Amino acid sequence: MGHGRRISVVGLGYVGLPVAVAFGRRSRVIGFDIDPGRVEELRRGVDRTGEVDPDALAATDAHFTSDAEALREADFHIVAVPTPIDRTRTPDLRGLLSAARTVGRGLDRGDIVVFESTVYPGVTEEECVPVLEEASGLAGGADFTVGYSPERINPGDREHTFTRVAKIVAAPDETTLDIVARVYESVVAAGVHRAANIRVAEAAKVIENTQRDLNIALMNELALIFARLGIDTRDVLAAAGTKWNFLPFTPGLVGGHCIGVDPYYLAHKAAMLGYQPEVILAGRRVNDTMGAYIAGQAVKALVRHGLGTSRAVVTILGFTFKENVPDVRNTRVVDIVHALEDYDFEVQVHDPCADREAASREHRVEIVDGDTLRPADAVILAVPHAAFTQRGWPGVTALLRESRGIVIDVKGALDRGTRPAGIELLRL
Image (tube, rainbow, N blue to C red; front, side):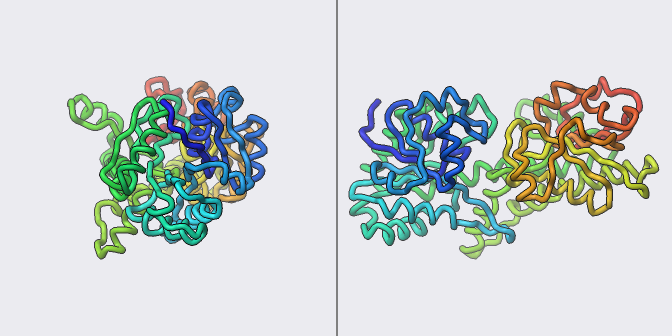
């Protein structure tokens, strides 16, 4: 299906790059990023996020650039830049508005700008359009139009990829909506869903992850209760899961750019409207405490083993925000690390997938090689990368002093039935 538009993608991270590559299989695409290093890597066929393999990069007709002038070649601009929260958990729209300014400078009459970044309802039309107008000198609606199509990329997921997940599309008028839908339908095999308006589409995105956040928060709270009862959470979930409508959520650390962030966007907008959310923020509070709770469980176990007063060694396996990805941004494993360091234990972190430079720069955590790990008194399997789970118990016990000690399996990735002798196993 043709669409006749010349496409640019602004922001070539784990969201934007798969979008650019998908469109580039059909026609030339301008892929823009402000990081010249990232652009140079992509030109060499290297994707540091691991989302696109070299063969797919080689097979796409994408012009990767950090020169904003190249955006003038396009008339359909897709903006896929991060929308994080700041230290006060307030939405940080600076990157998004800066990208809008960059696009605006090269905007022509008849252009369409579609935002994929996660925002609270109203941002596209109330925040982004004025920036586009100011930068371009054009009038939104009359000279150019906008759309919104929230990203649904799941990092590390090889099944639910960009082209295989239904795409929400929205625009302020039917003509623009038809064009936006047609453009995405040309590459998204799963089809599109036309939302009633842009604010509906913005809201749909934030509640997708807010719902998941709350379900995981419930599991985490149950894990805190069941630990006090002395029963295994996963045994309870296995039993409850035999009912047809029991939802299969499990406890764990909640980090990343979506689940741990999006609820704050919705809560922020609600507060602007004079409503103080209760349930949404309660879930966030539970999930944000789990790293400290896991560290506390490790400390108690070490004390039981008579290691509370000595400088015990704790090895943490995995530092990224989820398994089998290199991204350490918004990882909650850092909460475990710093909590244990506060107790003056020696903490060593090993992760063969993680971006080491980012871990050091953003979290002050040094990732160490597996062959340099000191024998540990406790091992915390925080992120079950395939590199760890494939080795199973032997890979974990080899890291313990005399193959004995404490193992905390955060996500229940190890087979409890084959636990070796001399191991005290804890899990959420």
